[in-house]
Amino acid sequence: MKNYTITVNGNVYNVTVEEGTTAGVVQNTAPKAAPKAAPAAAPKAASTGAGSIKVTAGAAGKVFKIEAPVGTAVKKGDAVVIVEAMKMEIPVVAPEDGTVASIDVAVGDSVDAGATLATLN
Image (cartoon, rainbow, N blue to C red; front, side, top):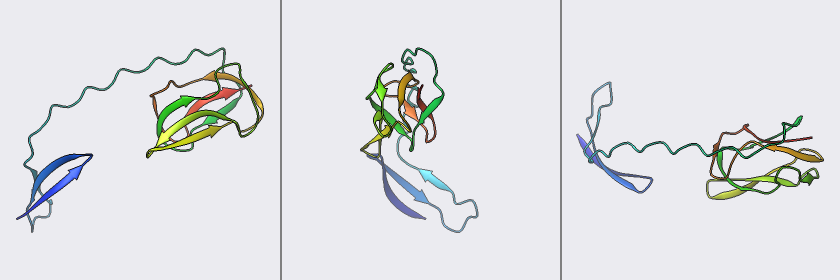
């Protein structure tokens, strides 16, 4: 058996790995913490109606800021929403000129790559 100390997200775990088994048994000797409750879903921003042009996230992350609220006229390349991923702020831009018809996320929401964040008319 081999003992290792592993740090994951700032939490230190002492693990013992048993060699020679096909299952690769890992025993966690760190005290078990109670699972954290999932955060309550944030309310969606009010929308005046979905537009036909989708503004989608290029990467998974967390909504950091809404740059262009509903009703704002935007040009192609203007930031509509800022997503934070890996400690970087990534602007999600308008794919073409239009007016923001809906914001489908709220600040603090976790989003997946490809998720619709807003729509334009």
